[in-house]
Image (cartoon, helix red, strand yellow):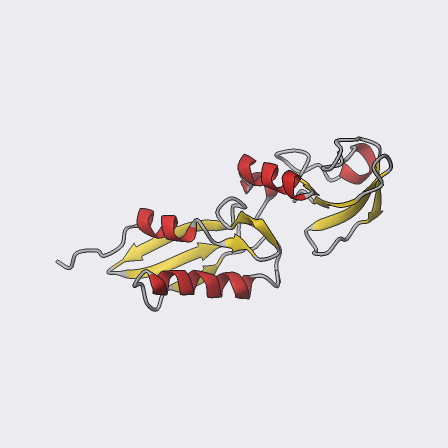
Amino acid sequence: MVKQLHTKKDILNILSVIRDPEIPVVTIEEMGMLRDVLVKDNVVEVILTPTYTGCPAMGIIEHDIKMMLDIAGIADAKVTLVYDPAWTTDWMSDVAKEKLKNYGIAPPLHSSCNHEVFSTNIIECPHCQSKNTAMISRFGSTACKSLFQCNDCKEPFEYFKCH
């Protein structure tokens, strides 16, 4: 029997430092995108779920995964994108939400989606914690965020949409 060179735990530890290229203060693990690692007969498959179908960051993330594993001596790792079940902000860790806030992005309001967020909830400014904010655009710099402005500190900020 061939000894397994890297365990699932080893590989998850290696991948835990890979950052989301669109929001570099959070990792793909903290965002809940890193769903699983399968190791069989020394073949490694990394299972990822993108935050959005067609997310432009997935190519960079796949490259980063393969590069990190190659550095660790794991060649020819396979990255599989899984869309079902769809990624949800429920998979984001509390650490990720706090990092988003400290970075200036308002994290999702709830652990479960509220599709009336824009009309019935107040998005708190991550800069000054004011609740006197207004949506400027349903779409921010990426599809997963909306653009808001604080009416008190006057700073614009993005809100990570719940989905």
